[in-house]
Image (cartoon, rainbow, N blue to C red; front, side):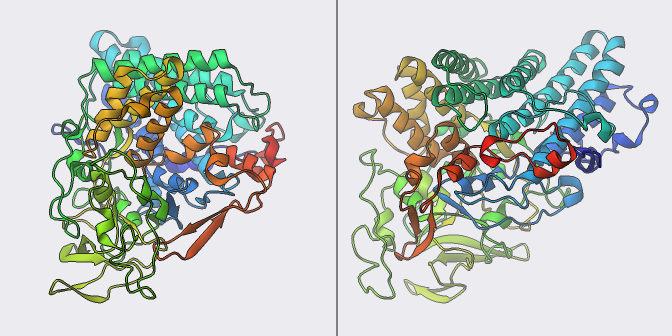
Length: 616
């Protein structure tokens, strides 16, 4: 049997088209390029752009549901995945993955194949524009075609970056694959060589792309720089902390420092050279009183279509909901919302432990830990100081808390048949129940998949007109706040706490209405790293970063305890134990969580593919 590295996925993904929009052009629903011979296509910049849209579509399919990866962390529960609204155009790369905090490394065979489908689609653009169009192009046309190649190379680099982040050494394919036989005996390329190719892609993209995107969803120089910096940041982390599960990979302090230095330089250019700003200038905005949600902080709006095209979104993948194209809507409301909101399914919700990460506005530091209490057995639970079910325990917190999550007696807009049903209070373990609050009757928020006592508000729309799978939010794959925090991390690794890096972390904190970091938080390299990690947790929660951070920092043992330990229970706000992770877990399981399994089906078809050591 011939190996099928990308053949099935290529058929699916090569005809997919991303939803892109601007005030001047509509690039939706272009005719599939793969049905045309080269002699009839690849004639104009428009042809090349249409092909590029297919590359964006294939790449979007492996990045725009990264929030599922949050389940690999300690703060978010992913209890499953929804089926995509349109599997033909968007595929279903994230299905069948394991999104628990442990035991996940062998469950991403499908995702691996979809990544290579995206690689092949980008190669399709790069190869044909380079070979069939550039030789006869000149002047402005040549520059435009080179920019199209730059966009495709950025997408290819992003995809290979994701591959090495999960699997280490991977096969490298830099050309179009037309027949399975062409890759039937390919071997894995050492990660360092793949990294060099990714850096080359990002560098070419930076050199050729415009300073600003041509349309919402297109990429520009800041995106290329930011991804090049992120690749170097990860490389520095791997070289500093080691990756013993990857055969042949060596720690190297000198390489780590060089990578961190390069990362900090790229991030600094993104920050300084392109006039980018945080959403609404990083201003926290206004916040409603406890138990109301008429006025939500600016951080909430950042994850609604109001932020589409905002400079903070350095790179995003667009979606087009009703009425323009419901088949290309995003699924965020369906995955983050409960039944009360258009029958949504609540596949993703915060764990109890996330609430304690939100600091107090008055002190800029942590509040006393919340105490789980069951109001059905403890009459004082709703009034006890610091009780997790006492709404007043959440007063005076980081504005991002109210924008991100709901606790007992917080309100959210109900939606049915595209119409508002008014406010619904979230009250844990009540499901569409009649409740009276201050003389007003409500039906409580139906969240039948929840087992922590908290629900996400982040990503859940609070206005009428769109169904649960018809959103038009442009998913951020790179945003400025992340760049600020990555710059702080990279520069701290090389120089220790620096004034400009501290200032950028404080800008991120300001949107939560928190004061600047106190002196003890920046007194040492270690203290400042802790402050950066804290901001990454609350600023980037549910965006897909935390699991990758834990692996590159070698922090799984720090979070869950060492091999053979008692493990860690995850509780709810009532104090009930829900899940226990890493109980008497073996060394081998930890190793398998640090590096993913090369799909056995690929190895069955190709004996030249080696397996990562923990999976032998």
